[in-house]
Image (cartoon, rainbow, N blue to C red; front, side, top):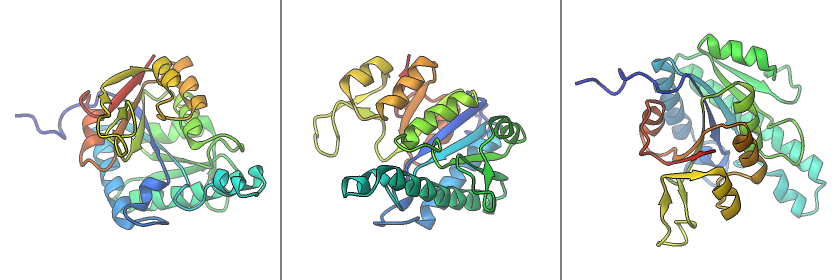
Length: 244
């Protein structure tokens, strides 16, 4: 019987969107080392198959600009601070990945050359082709745009075969499953339905970008061991697929 790891990948190149909150684990703030170790191990399993992996990470575990803007801070300043928080998370992910023997690069949408590379599309693709994990930081580099929008944009720019949104729930539901026990999970949904029903999959800008550029999106529970590997191998039973 063929082992799980020996099965060929269904996708050549994927982009994984991680929220900053997902890195906290059970903590109220910051980065949980066990979460980073588990994430790195999952990424390595996928990379060992030969699939090229890019990551976009948020910064909500450290700083959320929109929240402070509601408290009176200038929104542009708050968003710029949030971008810097994503760079911190990206460096932590790079470190965790390199500790288990993989090569990784952080590329930032804002210039911060002392700690990471500038985002250059052709260089990012070259890193991926050489088997390096590329972590995109600082969102799009612009205020008022979320890291969901950055993930959609980068997935389009690097020609990813699949965009994966790692969350704390196992897909997209008709309502918040933590609040409504009768909520049911979608196996598949169209972008138009997700937009019309405002299911909170991603922000509207990100969904429209994905829809208009025919990017497939799968939402899954990142805490489920082996989920990322099985998705990359073509398992369609995990999470929810959003497609055109």
